[in-house]
Length: 193
Image 1 (tube, helix red, strand yellow):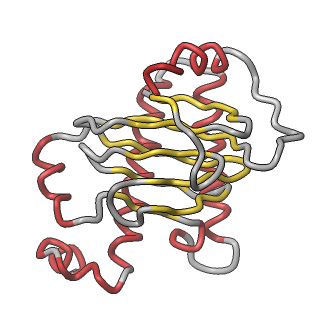
Image 2 (cartoon, helix red, strand yellow; image 1 turned 30 degrees about the vertical axis):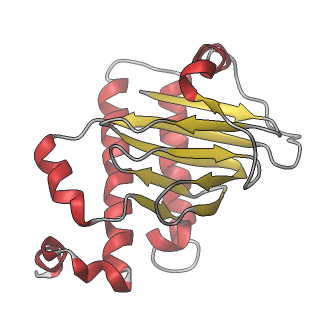
Image 3 (cartoon, rainbow, N blue to C red; image 1 turned 180 degrees about the vertical axis):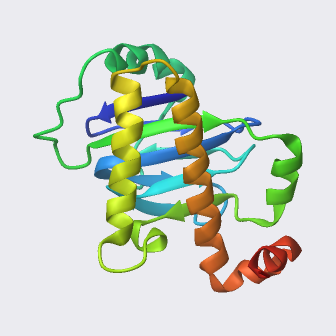
């Protein structure tokens, strides 16, 4: 499942623990992550995304303490908004355009990811090499996802699936760069050429 929404401040969405991987990509504005696992609270700015592994509840909101509504309760509103173009030229402080989705991984891959943090925050600086490299890559990715959402065509689902695969790869690369990544045995194997 994939969707994009403009959330006007004040706002908050609670995502339950489910056997799916969530990703939340902030296209414009910023929001706050709250979760029962590290990083617990995290500001997420435009051009950054979160990968939330299976069975990990989390919340997104306009402030660190904003009230939330369960995603299931606001899905009809989000689906209706999905049918209209998002006009985000003048967003109030605390508002955000968020691309959100879920991803179902095979059980074998999920078990291989058990050594990773439950929530992975990926910024532009984590992705590309060189000045502005990450921003260029993230913009190209979000532009492609947005186009497939706004103007689906033949093969759109396959394109979306591969772009989401790319999000997963970026998140895994980010984990491999972190100093504490060596705690999982398979990480050492991935680093070995």
